[in-house]
Image (cartoon, rainbow, N blue to C red; front, side):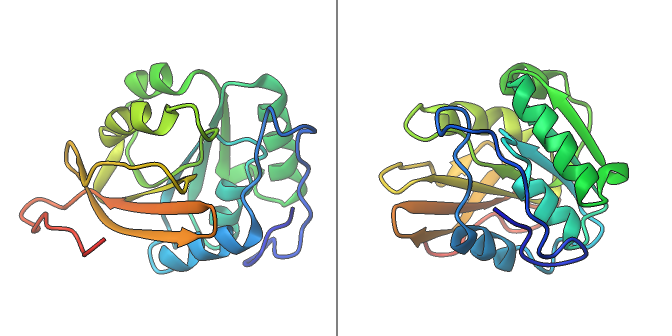
Length: 190
């Protein structure tokens, strides 16, 4: 597992052993995710929810995001995120928190321009957490979700509108946006 592009390009990232704790995003899928948001990254405030090793948030920081909050409920995973951020020279733009996602989101008072969601597959977490994510997305913000290919998510979740769905083998990427005030809410074809 490595950083693909930007200031930390080529850096190897530590991962927690065992796929029962984390499931790293494949490089092909990660490259696709960041191609989708490449013009939205510079200066962005990013939330990496279900951070695991932190590879998605670190990739965002490496490509120009202003800062990233990493959240994982596993203390060992959070420690790995901290080590990875330090090793990549990105720790000063990072904040690592340990906690359960829904509880953390309900207490959060920050707004984010990009939210990266990569929860464990086949556990129903994405469907449960999307409504709570909506309130922390800034107007004009983007939510990128990674899921198993069989999952079906709604076209709208509160003010979040599904703009596009991308398939990469057994993985789906979902791109939701939160319209700015006065912006049309219709999504692209899916």
